[in-house]
Image 1 (tube, rainbow, N blue to C red):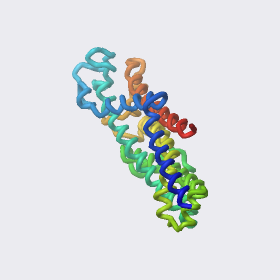
Image 2: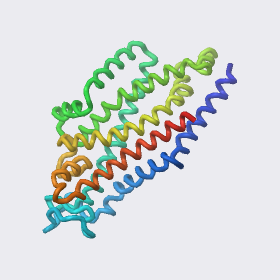
Image 3: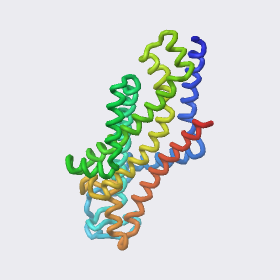
Length: 286
């Protein structure tokens, strides 16, 4: 009985490592990774790339069209749009790369606990139902009324939105995997729940979680953009991609490039994360 356990588990672990990194080296995975990497580098290097400060007001530069001095023009407050966009990327990346993993970690933990205790499962599923009953923007409006607008509110909305997604995903995976023969064989020879969880259930549930992580990051970009566009997100004068799009649409007839730049960045982030997620999903099926 120990032979299937020893052979199957390392084989699955090796497969997981192979598709996790190999998909980023070609095809859709490579395109998505390059798109995300370009945006990440632009945000990280913003202090070096930005010719002006994000809130610096330039004398005599009111709604100036794109030029060599101002690549995306300036806004109605004489601020360089290109510089503000670079610093806005930093805000969005912080929200996405912190809030989504936190929500995923909490959801995974709750999902794992719910598979071991019936009472915990009932409570968790009803709590997930309550969270999922509210559309994300309605949840955002409610939390903004309680907490006020800002980065903390956006991050909280994303965390709450992702907890039931990852919780139910890992619960379904664990319930399926623990019925497989090699898990049953391990249980027969005396393996405890903790050992099974650590060696079999959690490692072999990582594949769908990795796919969902890419999708959730693309959704998080949308959530930030929507909340900031509605005035529920990052507080002025600090820039975010959503608030720049909002300001750009207001001035689109005077300076079309104002809104095009942030829209391109949002599209690159969303499409990049989705392409990575699709590449991982396709690798799982091969």
